[in-house]
Length: 412
Image: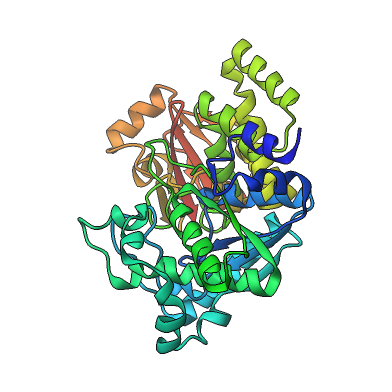
């Protein structure tokens, strides 16, 4: 299977800008680029697919360039958005760029990394309008989906000019690094084709470049993952822990899991077919989800992060939580109510403090019903005292009511 056929099999081709690109991908060695604007200090799973497409091209011998949008990040891309972005200052943008570069090196080692602020900051207004702006037809720009979708709600000139600014990037990399291909999600089609037009009009019709766009990774409701959108799954372990990251993939629906297994792993078609068979025979085992979660978590968080995620998952499933560290408890019980105390606390008061009971009477009833567990062990003694000496890792007591309702006591 050649490269393009493999990309199509995996559902990674939405459109090519030119039929010639098929032969070039399969038979030549191209330099290509993909971009990431540092409008946040972390990438998210919506970005991840772009870097996995890039990894496939790199494995086939093509040379990747990651363009960090230190300049375009100050402008804001209107693609896929219904409202104006909040503008960042230069220091914040550059700090974000450094963090994103670190994440990308984990996923796409060996890529050349550049920052478009290095050349965009050199443009003066007259130069920009005369040498760049003259090549862009307003009617052509208005027809771009990224602009057209915003005309009713409003779009500033700043964001309207984004496609021109990004076009400069493609031309710069074409001239200085012989970069002839840009990768992007389907929402980047307008920006990519604008860059092709600038290269042709500015440098001459004999200069040819190409674009490849892939489908977007969307949330369950079909909306695009965004850095400010609710439910974002971040690549930064401080924003989304390896355990939560792993659980995101484990909990996706069966149909989506089989799609993502092709897109996000390097498993062979034969191996994927085997997963399809297993899913049909025993869907409750979530074979595809677990394989997918392990592959992607290791890619983003390394072997250590995957081991950590699996340890927490196993402990919570088996109920044997005593082997978890304080950090692992915080990850595994993220979002669970936490009550803090500097003194030993009676179990009845602890249930109220952790919101597992609304009153002492209710707490005592739960204890009598044998519905309460402390650190995985059933308890029914109303006089039980909880303290740091018996806490997990000397810090947390994990309370459970019934099968799924949890609360934490943090011993300060």
